[in-house]
Image (cartoon, rainbow, N blue to C red; front, side):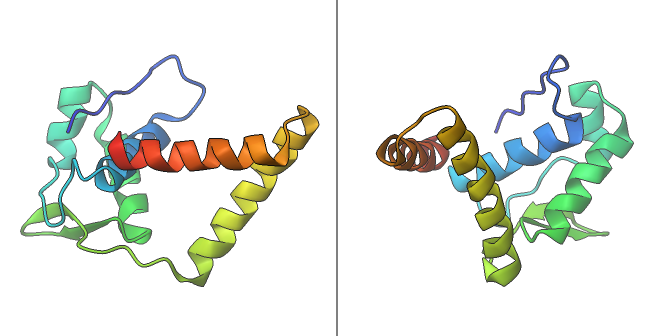
Length: 125
């Protein structure tokens, strides 16, 4: 899996890293139990501070996407459960995205089609 960080992006680097790893898991480019690079190794490879990678890994672990073991390092989780907290967060994000679409005069069908396309792209990314 190749991770690309855009240093010019307004998104924080740790969020970009988190998002890239989630996309890797969703598209099956990062298999369950597949080891991730160590924090220091990934930081060196990307040319970023190790605390930035640590923050991304901690978020991914807290959200259930990866498992961190002091002896084995970080690995992709076998399954990531949805749960009520995830559904609530996703609902809030989609509500905001839908509101933006409405403000920009996008029809409901255009919004739903775009959501469907993005879902498929995440699977094949």
